[in-house]
Image (cartoon, rainbow, N blue to C red; front, side, top):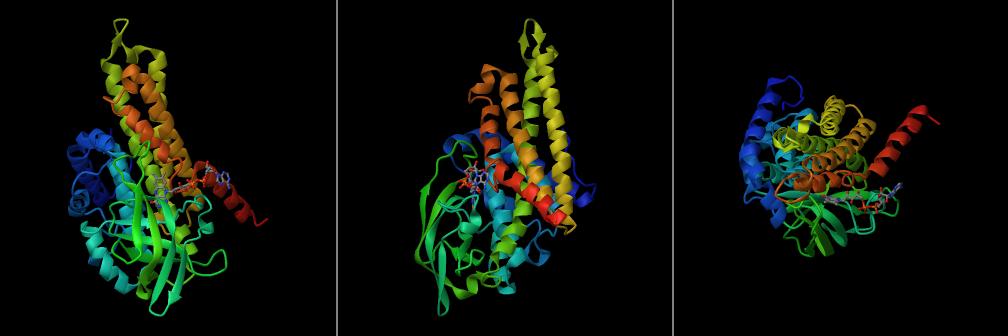
Length: 383
Ligand SMILES: Cc1cc2nc3c(=O)[nH]c(=O)nc-3n(C[C@H](O)[C@H](O)[C@H](O)COP(=O)(O)OP(=O)(O)OC[C@H]3O[C@@H](n4cnc5c(N)ncnc54)[C@H](O)[C@@H]3O)c2cc1C
């Protein structure tokens, strides 16, 4: 299947390169990576060589200076081949690299971006805590300034790349007001930092997820990102592109399910007929295509809004809800089309269903995103 994207030649070239790489280097190993709960060796360096770890970053740091439409297109292609690898790619390239490029000081960019964009260093972002998920602003990890450094105490939960990353953007409380949150760059080797247990998951198993622990963790004052207490703004701004990226991952999953279903239904015979000739089966496949195409239009429209520098929280939230719920439904239908073979692990659709479900939760649950959509209407109405 071809995929939708802007006509820009540059974006088309990126898609072709990523699609060819993912078909050769990721898709054949996706089941093994899922079973063994690991990423492919050296994957970040290889993605760095491909030139996609700093898609939105300035060229002087090795970035490609592209926008949210390209981000969505790359996410769709990687996720089509291996959603788990794509999730780790998203945490690195969007949650760490893009976020730092947007909000870091010139010195911080020089210090971290080149190594992260080449894939020598792996990044992650730590917002969620054991007691603060949907209510991210309610986080309790504390950072207290002492001379030339901050001391961090607390813990973070469900952090993508936690077990493997070299560096994290960590959100912590720096004042008494609920909105007094600040962002810190924390390296793995900092005193008082440790990684808790790696979490075993239902899906996205190629992507390592873990807990982070800060026990009197010493962070140099120059690792504060932006001004003290200014994080809520960048946190919220980055969520838009994260949500579009996650929604684009759902597109990749749905497209993979559609392709597997089509192939299987055209080959599988029952009652001396290819099962695609049975209306109940073909209707499911048609609906997969309809859902995918509708979500694709929605995701790329939201990406376009971000690319134009406009506020996109309502569009990004709505597009992610639609795409993620569509992908879970499509994956469940794909299992049904494959019958018993859909339910066993030799065929990829059961893995894709497990992977699809995460996107209804990560980066804001569907329930929270629906409430954001309505709050935005209320805000616009001025009531
Ligand atoms: C595999 C994976 C990777 C992740 N990676 C990262 C990462 O890299 N960095 C990071 O910071 N976080 C990460 N997360 C965390 C993720 O963003 C949170 O899991 C998510 O925001 C939900 O928080 P929670 O799990 O604490 O659920 P809760 O907030 O406890 O929600 C539980 C249920 O209650 C509902 N609920 C809560 N509040 C409301 C409300 N006000 N109205 C209606 N319903 C509500 C939720 O929708 C949900 O159904 C990851 C999570 C997973 C599973």
